[in-house]
Image 1 (tube, rainbow, N blue to C red):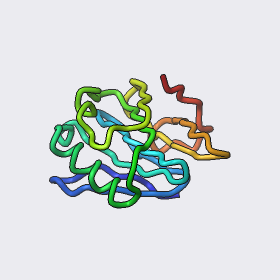
Image 2: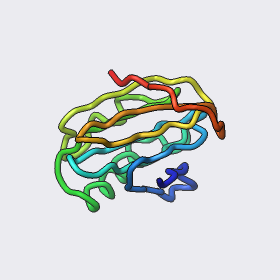
Image 3: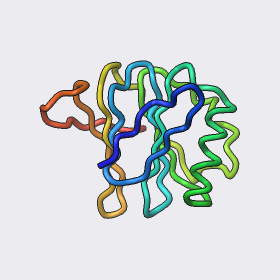
Length: 132
């Protein structure tokens, strides 16, 4: 169960696994790519949300698993226009604007990606986070 931590000073921390946990999504964007078999996650802070950084992370996702992925984005502060020029284009795009200060979990089961959240660092139950 890898934690997907924020990018730091341009360092792109990319994780793959199941489930993926994005700790303390404050003003961030939790970015998940699913290729039909693997979840790959990137945790962008607001400062790291630029077209160049998102495209660079997408190239690293493609190096892990090439091709069209289903892309999921969650967090209180993200801009869909950052994802408009990804090459190759995602197979699909899903997103949700969430509250701030939460942990987000992406889980893959039987070919379906589901999202849950809880208060940052909490020990309570994970609650459903619906994607559009």
